[in-house]
Image (cartoon, rainbow, N blue to C red; front, side, top):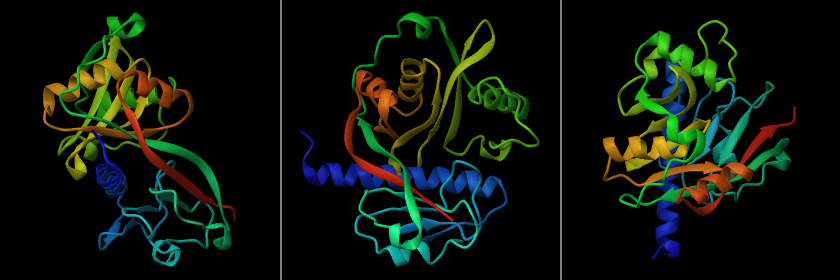
Length: 239
């Protein structure tokens, strides 16, 4: 049975996992983000597209502590409010979207792959060429310009890019990272949950699985055995 205290602990672990993944992406782009104690992860320089400039790691962090380390003067600053308890409107921010952290206990029975998901062959991405193909599939078939968002430096070290293939072509996938003592799933696309959860079970059977979703993606996660454990918000500077 999940109590309020357990839920708060899980949300902290999910937030820490997400911050560790954001940290890895930023470092692969040559940035040097850091942690402010146990309260906030942040980057003083603008982060890559779709990645926040700061992530809160515990509830009730003062807004000033979140914003003082990031670049709020140039367009595009964003903050992941992991406990949905910040009010950044006075600093010129607007809510970009709201979502729910999700949690699935280790050892829970795996969902059965049906339809499109049943015919996929899953493997771990290895090497720059496969990673570029994975990113193109993630972007809907568009080839990444330049070096792309996901750099080869991300491969390994507790981060796995999973690819689901049909006829040799990548049609589904996800990233799994193990920061915070959980398996955090992000960047999910295609009919991925059955294959991704099976891959997590095979690699890290002892780890709970976390992530965040909203809308129809949240409904799909719940059908796959996840439970919502609390809200988060992403704030974007309106400047």
